[in-house]
Image 1 (spheres, rainbow, N blue to C red):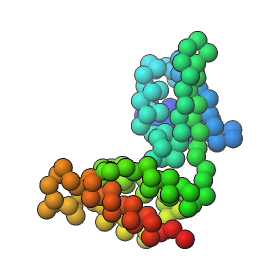
Image 2: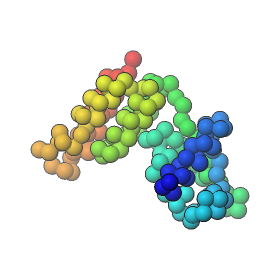
Image 3: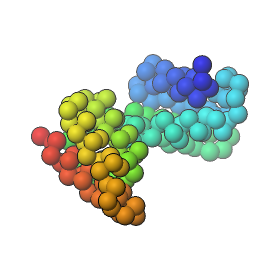
Image 4: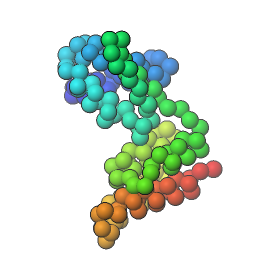
Length: 150
């Protein structure tokens, strides 16, 4: 099994066993798995992001920890939070991750998710200068999310 997947699976099990929150001591988990602590950081920063529906808090020092929480919002609040957090620009990859998260949490239908992913794909922006593609995508993504709200 891939080391990153193994680390992610352990953290997911901790989230599933508790109250949607996992508290980790990075060095302890690294020693348990047999990896360097920076590998734990990599997994957390790449797989447990706000786009994937998680909040990560950390406390440094001797009694330090990393706390990962699953975010639970009602559909309209989550969509508005996402719309407000997108900012002025968004990459295709980040947009796709947000759409997948919304779909996996039942906040977008399959058809809505496919439509948004298709509309925000780089393939649609070939005629636009690269420096404005992410700006245009962010504006379109926000408008598409607004149309999905009840």
